[in-house]
Image (cartoon, rainbow, N blue to C red; front, side, top):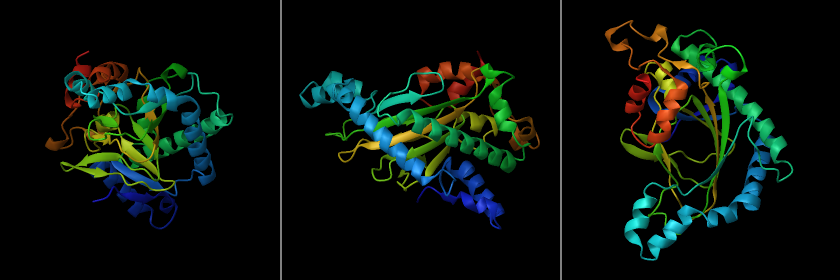
Length: 312
């Protein structure tokens, strides 16, 4: 069983209907799929790999060696099993920093900022294209999901677009700690440029953890909790995790197209109430409230999060 791979260039030809159906299936049955021929230049992707790997070497590698996960694992293997083992259950073997429009970015290597700004522009356009495809597949008007994510007029209502740059360094005891604990993503559309050599990302499909296979220059798409809400459950956010590994320093660059904190989230009216099976499955809530709940419950089941946010 393998995560679907979809050739996005086929949307422009005679196979458009078939490709749209494959994307619908990816959203409905998988919550994850890989895009190839997505229009992002390979030359740009090569530069992104280079600057992110160099940034880790320059700024992050030594910091990770001195970090809490490394110290806890050392303590565990050194015999402090009870305390260190319990704390490792709530720890990720991950080095991570986030880029968005208003925070401070690494200044080295020299090409980092220019390259990542260009990359983020391209990924944001791809995210909006994917949302328009979802609109069409769900029978919604073009631009519906983006409009919901805005939540109003003005810059303060703009959807949030962030990029999480992660590395999962080699782990001497990967059976004792996980790279990233299982969770679903809180927001909208997630676009992942993952390592094309070192595996580790897995999704939960029909009760079984399966690999999201590394694939050169592919962009992995997954649907977050808010796409599940807007679609009234037709599209699902899916549990996923990252395993730690002896081998390789796995690079993972995930971009998140999320609603504005002020956006009101609720199932699209067009998808509610047409049949008994279409009853509204999710409460109405403000996305900022949902994120408050998510901050405390990220690694717990999502259904209570929806209920808690709806009660705020």
